[in-house]
Length: 372
Image 1 (tube, helix red, strand yellow):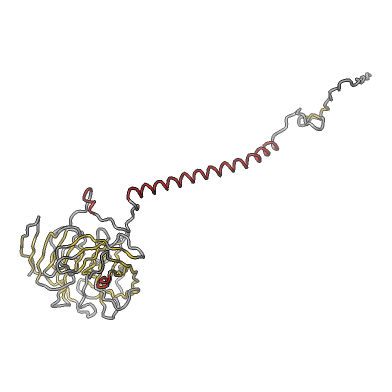
Image 2 (cartoon, helix red, strand yellow):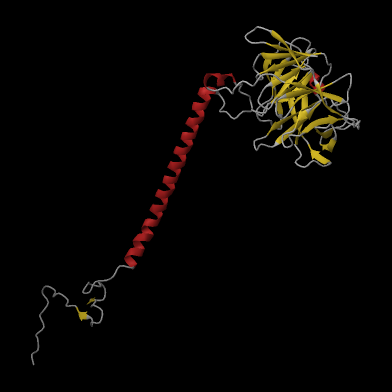
């Protein structure tokens, strides 16, 4: 029996809800005790889960009937880990990226998450994992679940607590170094596991049922009381139901109809609620830092222009004598122009040279002209 409690504007209204139905049964012993479940992106009819019976991380694709459709070994994931969490987000190209990890590792203050690309073909094989180191800002925590927001493409870690779980956000872009977590909020209840719906709703599994939020920063909108004990929870690809594990029957997964709809995306003034993460693309230093960067950029442009102008002036000064010499050597000589040294005038083309008369010197006797 499940009881739906609707919480509008602080008022709780209880109403009967359908009992959870059997979604599927798992007969394969490799995944009979699956502790995590996430709907596929590339394959909407597949549930992804983890198995660690061999001591190494193994990724399984379950059909809607509970049968194993493919098994993958995870290269790059170390052996001997607990591997208790799995989630999926879309990357910038729309493809799915699966993240897995051992959340108990975070009790020492930091943990490693491993990303693998969602397989495109459902056949046995090997996927390669890339590790990312993340660190809590305030010491160690034991986490309950890892969530992937399908709308923002961002990951969240939710701690395990009896009465007040904390939500931490990973940076928008994961780098090769240590990625610092940012505390987002504190919930007013304990969390065992959780999952995002495709429309942005968040479903948390608690000790007494399910709590549904319109978004990761919203308050609880619906409470579904359950008498089925268990930890794992996943949301179907269409967002209509949650699939939960049953501790009394580990091979059985049950479906619970989900109430409510997601809150529309923030716009305008509401968009200020978005958290600015350290790895997000943004100019550092606030307004003063931004102004300083702009000033440095302008100085760089001015220096480049001045340098190029100086190079151009030097080139023109060096080329001016050569240009003058070239002009004089190619200038045409006009007919009748004095040559200077030969005592002749240069005649026009086709004419004989004309002798130039020398002026008489003062006091020199004039030669008589002989007449014939």
